[in-house]
Length: 271
Ligand SMILES: NC(=O)C1=CN([C@@H]2O[C@H](COP(=O)(O)OP(=O)(O)OC[C@H]3O[C@@H](n4cnc5c(N)ncnc54)[C@H](OP(=O)(O)O)[C@@H]3O)[C@@H](O)[C@H]2O)C=CC1
Ligand SMILES: O=C(O)[C@@H]1CCC=N1
Image 1 (cartoon, rainbow, N blue to C red):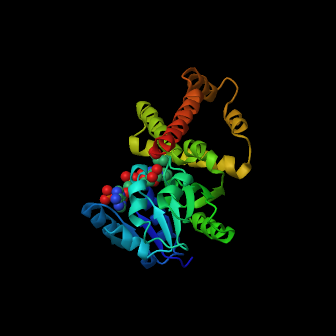
Image 2 (image 1 turned 45 degrees about the horizontal axis):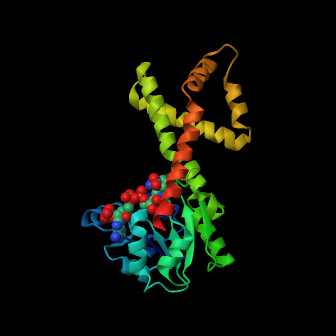
Image 3 (image 1 turned 90 degrees about the vertical axis):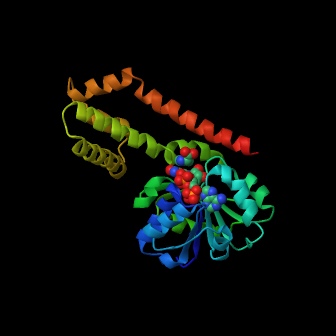
């Protein structure tokens, strides 16, 4: 855990990863450097995190062993073309972008750079992330092991084939948004039923956390856990019937298809 880590771009996802690294207390914050585009983001970063910050992307490259590209997909091509001359063959480049494949990145780098493609999610900030990871052929097995260890600081990590990434984005990269919508909707329902908003949000959050933990810790299939809540002729099955009537599960499945489809389309548009 003694590598120098650089972030090029450090917004929502970059700061979730940065926060996890700093909070892990296994990485010296002084060994982390991040660049952003605007003065206002630079000031904000400097205020929030005890790391080195800059507006110069090349300075990040020159000061890092591992370089995380945490800009939006539309910026990838220009950033890669900006930094490729100063990247050396032993530096590791980490992509976190949706919709950009490794072949495309190889092409933009135009040389044998070591690329690790990942898809993290925002729960990495609290070390409960779920990250998928794959590499190009220039990354050694030992380097993949090292990077997996770094990603474990963020939560769970799984090596996956690149062709599964669009589906993984729908399942884990984007899904915190659906879960937060669920929390918000449950809180709205509770407010409608007379519970104050703040209390309702906290109770909904704890219930979602507890349900996920119950499923993970027991290994019981979610359908069975659902059945265990539904007492015969009881209140829960009335709610379940209503959710089915409004296509709850179908809405989730279609949303995920749309998410994965969009990610695939982004890939095609970049080619
Ligand atoms: N948000 C999420 O939950 C997830 C996002 N991702 C991926 O993470 C990446 C970033 O997303 P997200 O964090 O949401 O985006 P944000 O818009 O929050 O952050 C983008 C960052 O890039 C910086 N930036 C833009 N242009 C440049 C430049 N030329 N040089 C240096 N920095 C630049 C911005 O700086 P400034 O503020 O100064 O403009 C900002 O810090 C995307 O590729 C996305 O696909 C992956 C998984 C989950
Ligand atoms: O919305 C996006 O495209 C990114 C990828 C996963 C989460 N946010």
